[in-house]
Amino acid sequence: MYDVIVVGAGIIGSWTAYHLALQKYNVLLLDQFSLPHSRGSSQGHARLTKRSHRKHYCSELIPEAMRHWASLERVSGTELVLHTGHLTIAEKESTGELISRMKHYMDQNGVRYTSYAGHEIGANFLGMDFDDNFSAYFEDNGAVLKADKCLQTIWKEFLDLGGTILDEEKVLAIKPINENNVTAETNKGVYSSKSVVLACGPWIAEVMRDLDVQVPAQAATVKVHYWKIRDSYSRRAKYDFPFMVYMSGYHVYSTPDYEYPGMVKVCYHHRVSADPDARDRRPSDKHNELAAKRFAVLKNLVAKHLSYLEPEPTITETFLQTMTPDSDFILDYHPLHKNIILGAGFSGHGFGPAPTIGKILANLATSQQQDYDLRPFSLNRKYKQPRL
Ligand SMILES: Cc1cc2nc3c(=O)[nH]c(=O)nc-3n(C[C@H](O)[C@H](O)[C@H](O)COP(=O)(O)OP(=O)(O)OC[C@H]3O[C@@H](n4cnc5c(N)ncnc54)[C@H](O)[C@@H]3O)c2cc1C
Image 1 (tube, rainbow, N blue to C red):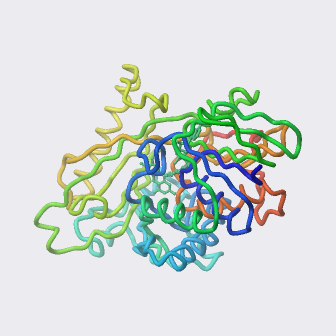
Image 2 (cartoon, rainbow, N blue to C red):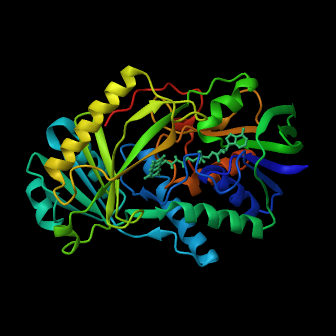
Image 3 (cartoon, helix red, strand yellow):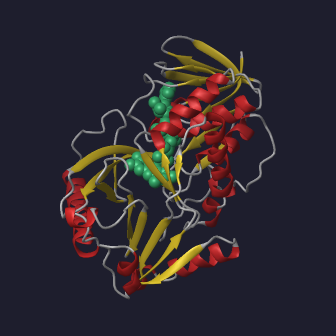
């Protein structure tokens, strides 16, 4: 009998399990695949994090998360966070109040940043060409997380605290017995606990199906492109900071030349619904057409505004994300069973705040007080379409 079973050893489930182990709970962390694996959302080398966010309740999770990342670095003696800063650029007309909203939030919360008029961007960041139709700011606190190292480090620290990890165990059924007992049946055995946290990433809908709850979280593929830095620039400038460009109705994000040295990851936030077990199945013609259009937009943006990069990506990879209709997370109890907890729908921005999310889920699993207003993350909220 465990205190808590956590299903899913991605970044969310792993932080949840680690927080519980720190509080001396007896925890089992289960994953369907042999660990480490490359099939969920948390894999890869780099994720960015920053304080400014379009939604203040997401931004509020970051300071505590950064403290936990730093503490994990300290206890493990492993560097996990690259303190690079982060550049945000927005086309003024099509994004309206976005930049001033985010700056206002940072001003109110004492977040340090430097503003740039569009024409000043190129003078400060070589090979980035924008005019005064854009404006920008550079946040000192922006950072890059070494994603794979983060995961492996948490697992190690969790095991050192006496936690149990069982991989290659797919949870086939979750059975609520009573308010103090729930079982997880896998392909290898049956485990009992007082409560269970489901942090199953793109597989959440499948796991919840037999629990009579429809979770509005859809697995989707995203394409990630790496663009080579032109030789003429690589000797003159450092491209060790991530950036984000907001334009009419879409945004493009990057991570620095860390994952593949000499290449910068620049991606359009475009997702195509997918079966997480068949991510490379050919999408419909309609999806393909849309994907081709968006890739053309991305290429155009690189050609027009990022002259330090070659005009075609050198490497393209496919990853999985889990989207909710409003891109906000779901952190809640099962509506009928308070000892079944859901952490789902991280919509492409769950890695940075994962330590705080893990603590919230750990608190839900052990009925402890929360430090955050969880209403924006409730399962039964009204799902509004996201806006820039
Ligand atoms: C390309 C890309 C770029 C991103 N960039 C950023 C970024 O810059 N900043 C940021 O903050 N976030 C970013 N994200 C989002 C972030 O990585 C995700 O929000 C986060 O990793 C989600 O983690 P998770 O633990 O929910 O899911 P996963 O990592 O998918 O973990 C779920 C785990 O559950 C296991 N599982 C599922 N079902 C079962 C079952 N039945 N039995 C046992 N185990 C099961 C799976 O095997 C998997 O290991 C990015 C995501 C992608 C894909």
